[in-house]
Image (tube, rainbow, N blue to C red; front, side):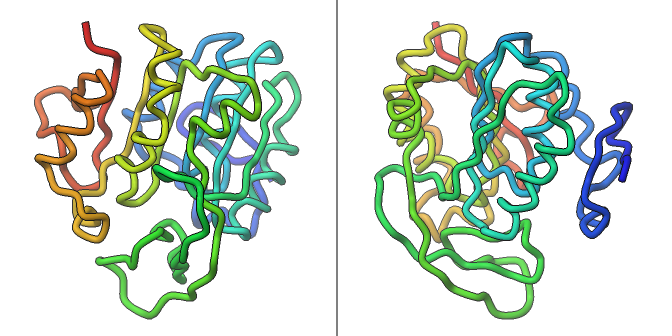
Length: 234
């Protein structure tokens, strides 16, 4: 069915329309619209239902490429449907069924009735128990090497594992150089489960040669479900 996301019309599976708000995350939407350019190579890490991958593919156009990473099998299947529904005039999109981390391995993945909080660690802010399953964990560097790509735009939403995923992109960050733009959703409420805190987050950013700024100017850098822009430092 046709569905409006801000001022853009896409086609989605009607069964999940309750999970696709019309006006969610306006600053993130604007950032994608303004910064994904024709022929861009994009990685969408933690793609959920693939809606942002669809928007990125449209912006990149047929000369670009999008790689979407999503560990929840149900979400990845719907992402593939949404990508197929919206493929005309868009960049090709590859969906990889895996979680992003700092080293390749198998790991326990926690899935909930509220699927947007699924994570490599138990959720801290939902009621009800999780269904546990084993998933493949990949690194961004691993994917880029296998596919022969150097992304210049990365969107990330990995429910607390954001800095582990960034550590797994060290080589890619260096290769992309000054062209790279990363927009990452922050989940500091989840960081203790990943042995992270604000100080270690700042240390990771610095060690990768990045500088950070909040997507919404004048706001704190690390707040619950906020977005941070990461770019190579001078």
